[in-house]
Image 1 (cartoon, rainbow, N blue to C red):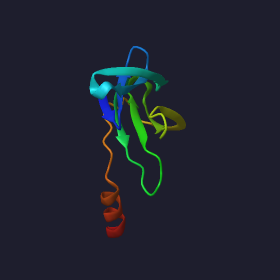
Image 2 (tube, one colour):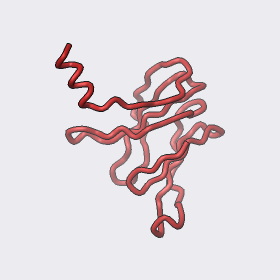
Image 3 (tube, one colour):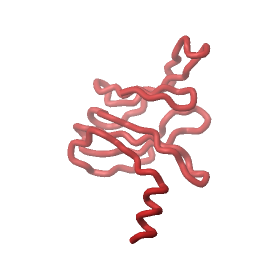
Image 4 (cartoon, one colour):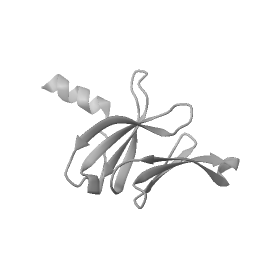
Length: 111
């Protein structure tokens, strides 16, 4: 899996059980490897979750063979994900779909 975010490219590397971070250089002509962040067994899918009200952005990773979701804070200076220690045990997660904050607030108001 690959995604881009503010001049960075993130790639899940299942062999290394990591998310690799690359900086986009020379107007997209080349990538520079910045870091490999360990994320648990077999990172199947991940997504960037935007922070709200000054909170930092995060990368949430589904570790399929690790039976967990993992939250990584994206360092605003480097763009490299940093482990927060937050985990959610989920059997065999294969996809991460964030719920928009507006939908959560609407549900809270109704309920």
